[in-house]
Length: 132
Length: 130
Figure 1: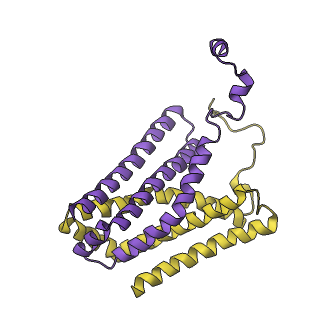
Figure 2 (figure 1 turned 135 degrees about the vertical axis):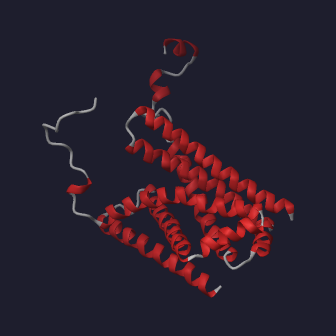
């Protein structure tokens, strides 16, 4: 603390103002809102693509997902949705799990799950797209 | 520290003490649908990985998703998706500081429910008609 103030011109109050108890300010809130805004059009696109997919056999489904526009929309949806859901599940865990060890373990699992789902989906979409 | 015996002082009231209101139900549903969608992404990743794996894997997924139970789960997933989306839009309105008056609050809560149900029915009709 005293070391920091000797190397910075900012006052201690100025450094902490607006950051709150979590030390991260509005970062979590803001990222949650940015992905939420992106999710609105992407979700609608996702449902439309899934409806189109439901009417096709294997070859037709590969062809549809392999189309650049469809693949890009799906990739954007996957990216924004998995990021958003990781933030949301983090809040749920922090609200209900009070034992420190369990909480940290679940927060890690939350991140692993979101990244695994996102990466596996992205890999599948890219494989289908580049194979065609 | 964890308390061992019963509380000796009045505790702050929690959910079960209040009469349910539509805004409260919508708030709880927003969290429940959010959590459901978290696990619902498994439905998407399984379908995509199966599609990338080949026709036999995709055929298995199609058979499961196309069964009555599968369709029921996908219908529920669709509603959760639309409900969470409409609830999110309601939160955007609140983020601007608007829509917090009692009457507007109630209308927004009911609107969220009807819009999500309407969109789900619309998607289902599109599925049947497609």
